[in-house]
Length: 140
Image (cartoon, rainbow, N blue to C red; front, top):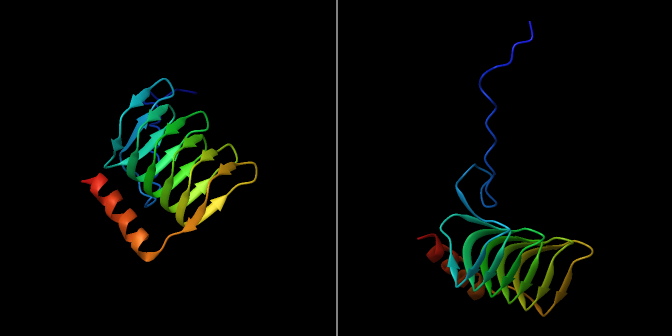
């Protein structure tokens, strides 16, 4: 009468920060520390520690993570600690984020409670083209 199916439901794939479709992503877990620069051809989710520069199309940072280096991305959702400059087309700074460094952006959302020490600059067309170029180079 109440039979269980032998098949368990499959977990849903995360959606891309750049397009809304399910695509592959790279995850740096909370117990991982990477020393060196990162360049990702897929979306990057960081829950651990990165000591180096990050270049990717889309970056999602967990609230307990740390990035010590510069971030260049077309879109970035930051929730942890970033000690370095940030250049992003679309930037979301969550309430748990702590950023020390200059921020260059096209569109920005800052949640109440976040803390940022540095200068804000809207992207000029040259800077915007450079960020897109760098993010595309990371994707190659």
